[in-house]
Length: 419
Image (cartoon, rainbow, N blue to C red; front, side):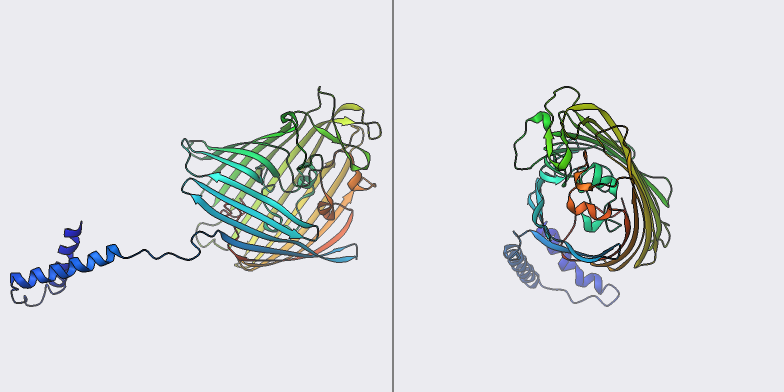
């Protein structure tokens, strides 16, 4: 290889002057001197120390700050929802790790802390630690990434906000003509605000939650893409929430399981020619919650209760900076009695200005109705926490959200708009 490089360097001036008069013949001694000089230069280049940055072994660091001014029935309030610190780095060629630490009005929380394999055979990938489990469309998205200000009520109620889980996840890329991935999770619980499980309390494996998901993606045409997913989470022995919000561990080993299942669909229209800042995205998700009911006073087991919830949202790009969207959410609030069908409905519209990819402003109006007149925090069968109740109380809500990002702050692949 060295001799080829030397020959190329020797021939370069002759090729450049191919149309000029040939240079006078060189003596063998002068050619040997030039070859010796070139060899010395190559030796110096090959032996030079490689430039190393001082922060080579430091992780990539970034932060997102999410603030909201929320006017609920003419009672405005400013909220620092999150100052989210993200750290990520390659541990070695076979493993990467990341951590997400969030500070808010409610304190400091470790949202994620996990590591993930990169080069397992047979298209396998293993994730371990605390991560967001892949249930549905938005459960893996951090709050500041959502296309709307607040997470839909159906996800808050049935999942418990972000799908936080402590455990293991196996992902397999199925060898099909289209994109198809299969994921399996076993973890202590599902949902950041799932108040049935305490992360500090050890539990037997039969109270863990086991989740499976299939997610397919394909292009229907040059301009239209589709994502289709189905998810199911199963807890063999479930803990109920009775009057006052205190969790009651189900002691009956028979028929005490809880199953949460869902189907989600996303359609994207984006013109292949000149459509970078044009397009429409529509997504919808439907969930069923199946669990055993318990008497709110005695905690005695009753029959099984099936409730349903879902949302649909649509959003359009109107240029480089402007997006408009709306969504509707209908949620049957879980109840310990089959005869009581409490229903919460939300109707919302929003406008988003993305001044840059690091600076975003969003204005939203939401109208919430509910047939349940009691305190949401004490409603039996619910899994949401105080932070998620903001968009569940009946009334008119005006929200102004300002989110900024600085440094390296990435949560997975969001390249396909809204995927």
